[in-house]
Image (cartoon, rainbow, N blue to C red; front, side, top):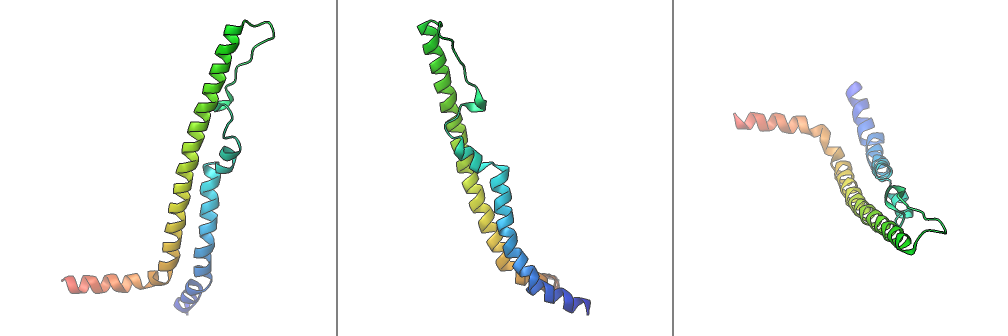
Length: 123
């Protein structure tokens, strides 16, 4: 009786859950890597490092501060772009792995029988 209930769940709700878990995994990866936040703040300074000058600051110091701020923005853009690209590859990998797992889902209960057969013929 328990085995019949298991197989009923495995091939109905379990299989549906296997497909539904793909979306959950994709959302988790996107959230862990903060891809939407990185995309919104793509041109922000790295770690919000930004220098300010006053009105009476000499021009050479203002140019130096401008160069520092531009470098901080360029570095932030470079790092965020790299993480976003890595995130897209991670999302593609998770999606493919999830789809493969969902497609193999019906065959998993048959694995013990296959392994027993393989063990029997190898002796």
